[in-house]
Every structure is written in C-alpha cells, then in structure tokens.
Image (tube, rainbow, N blue to C red; front, side):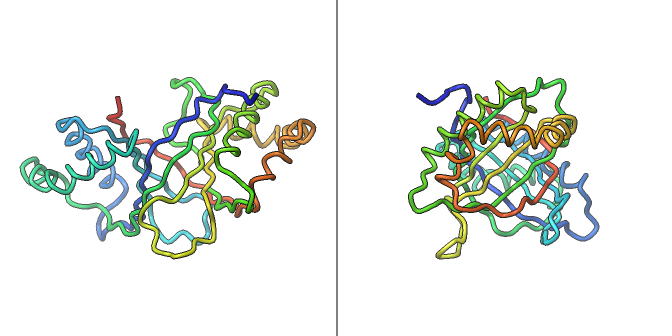
Length: 243
C-alpha cells in the first residue's frame, strides 16, 4: 500500500513567455496583473498568478514568465472566455494599465502536485526558489505509478526530517506546436524559503543515501529515463482568487 500523506491533486496551468515593452519595468507588470485581479473578483472567476524570473538559466530568452492556475478545466474556459469577451471593455472602462510586456508561446499544461511538506504561511518568503527540469519517461514508465512513488518519497522525507518543499509534474496539454516533443513532462521543485533551500543542500548526501537504502531511487528510476539539468527561477506569487 502506498503512502497517502501527500495531498496530491491535479489542476490546470498556463505559461506565458514575456519580454518587457520599451520603457516598462517589473513594477509595471505587477500593476497590470493586480488590475486584472480586480476584474477576476468582479466576475467571480477562480484563477491564480505567479511570475517566474530567471536566476540561473543561461539560455533564458524572456524577461519573465507568467504562470497561471485554475482549479479545473471548467474554470479554465470560464476565465479565458471572460478574458476574450468581457475584459477589453472592462479594461477601457476602468483605465487598466497598458501592457507591460509582450508575451508569446502561450501553453497550457496538466499540473500534478505530487509532494508537499509545507512551511507555515508566516514563514514563507515572498520570492522563492524553483528548479525546472525536462524529463522523459521510460517506455514502461507511468505518471500514475510515478505519483505513487513520490508519495512514498514524501513519507520518507517526513521520517528523515527533510526540508520543507514541494514537487509538481507538468504534462503538455495545449499550445505545443512540435509534433514530437523531446520530453514527456516537466518536474518542478519549489522551496518555501531560502533557509529550507539551504537546509536541503546541507542534507543532500545523507538524504540521497537514505533514499537509496529504502530502494526509492531505484523505484523512481523505473519510470524516469532522464531529466535535464535544472533551470532555476525566482517565483513571485502575485494573487489568487481561488476559493
């Protein structure tokens, strides 16, 4: 029987890859997004927004990435429909800020939250570290079975006294133009504050040995063929209207 300590859930996510417009800065991005939050509240729409800004990503082509989330597919299409049909008039009537950036490559993904050891809200940093890796499944690999392994790894982390962090797996859904992607999912690790990230570095050798002793690295590798090196981004949580 696999552990059910992780509050595993599945939501919808979107990513928009953006460059700042001439004369604009990140504060203009936030002003535009917080104006959009008011629209969402007025329309009763459920959506959250975070921004990703590159820290260690040597080939980053964009100034920032907008990351949005809906609790399910129904809310995804409700919000998009309102954005397309109602927001232009609302923005004009409410003097919404002009676009701070130009965004391309809008993509939507299925977001599997598979591992969470949470830090109390009052101890979380406003801006946190996230690592993103592109991963391939083995021919016999399974996301469903991999999620079970991550639940076991979370239980092991709790027993070990590991740092507080989360893991998400993103599967492509819409907006991907390549007929054959060279990856099957993106694995994201996020830490709630810098102290926990630092703790993870200091614990890493012992933590890896602990996982190996329990056979969990081998179980995980039964499903994952390979993953890229990590691109590290600052995550700046902006708002949520999700109930």
